[in-house]
Length: 256
Image (tube, rainbow, N blue to C red):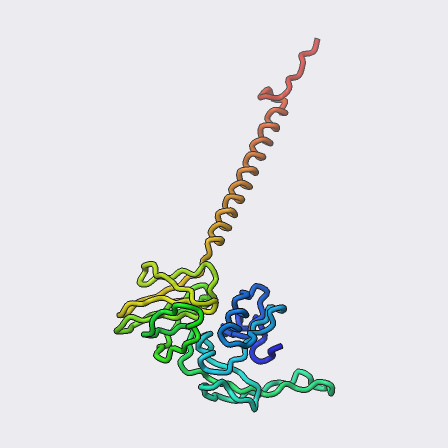
């Protein structure tokens, strides 16, 4: 099991994007695609634990990984740059049968970013996805909404925008408010062809099943309100029929 990095799910609290992840619904393609591209295991599929060993800067750029942690004393990914050494707290103080974890060293990956714009042509097949884009320009993300990604481009020539997002149904893109076609080279990446000039790119995650679920919830709520209204009306009618005031209720018989 991979033990470097932040505890799974803590990345949500701190806004950190990690490739070391544990998720019961992690796509199967994470494991199969990584093995096909690199020939190495991406992690433990049986435990839904995706934790690829990044050995080169090209592999890191493939996933949009900007920083890599390794155990102290080990060599960082080829092409990376050393940043600092991080001391690791010993969680086994007083336990003589456990070895404390080693310190960690942080390496930065030049040119890696959640999104890059390159003059290279669009990817045509998964087999060519591993080709490094040395001319890629990192794109700065605007905002921090995990279901919404906003970018601004400003290239004098047309280029390919490579966005490191899990390719699941529901992502839609616009360019300057108009629909933008997305390509799907792999489970790790989305791509789009961007014309020259300054453009505002926005991606939103909203699967059709969300809309269907909201419609069904609304129909159910309206049905429940309708049923409550009908029940209340029926109760009022029964109450009126039972009144002894001559308005629909039983009348008393005259004596004698």
